[in-house]
Image 1 (cartoon, rainbow, N blue to C red):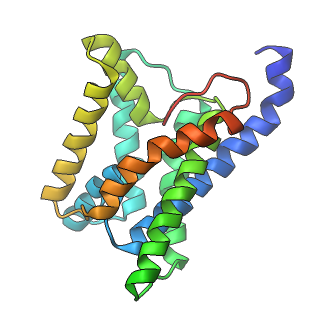
Image 2 (cartoon, rainbow, N blue to C red):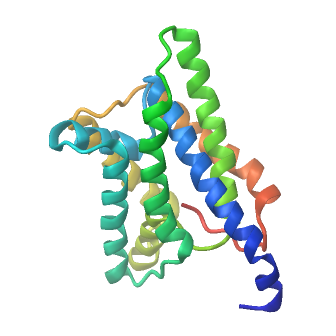
Length: 204
C-alpha cells in the first residue's frame, strides 16, 4: 500500500461500511414495498420460503457459496468482499425488523423508488471505496476471463438464472425487480465518479 493509499484508508473504510449499511437499508425498503425485489433477493426469498431462515441469512449463505466458486476461477477477495457478504445480510434483517410495510399503493411505490435510489448511491459508495469486489461481481469477472464470453452475456446469464430459480421457488418477481435492473446501472454510473476515492472502483 502506498503512502497516498494509507492516508485515504480511513475514508475508504468509512465509505465502504456506510455504503454497505445504506445498501441494506435500500434493499429493505424494496422488500417492504412488496412490488418485486432485487434479482438475488428473488432467490433469497424463494429459499427462505422453502427452507426457513431469513432473507438476510440466505444472503450471507449464498454470498459465501459464491465466494467458494472464486477458488477455481482464481479470483482474489478483499476486505470489501468479505464485508459485503456479512454486513449486508445481517443489516438487511435488522432493518426489516424495524421497517414497517406501507398499506397504500402510492406509499409502496414511493418506498420502492426511494429504495432503488438509495441502492444506487450506496453501490457507488462501497464500490468507490475500492477495497475489493463483491462476491457476485467477482464471479462474473472470473467467468468472463475463463470462458472468454462478453461481460454482458455472462452477467445476463447469471442474473436470469438466479431470478428464474428464485421465481420457481416462490420469490417475489414483479415490476420492482424489472425497475431495479433497469435503473441501478445508470444510477451507479452517475454517482460512482463522485464517490470513487482512488480511481480503482470494483463492482459488487
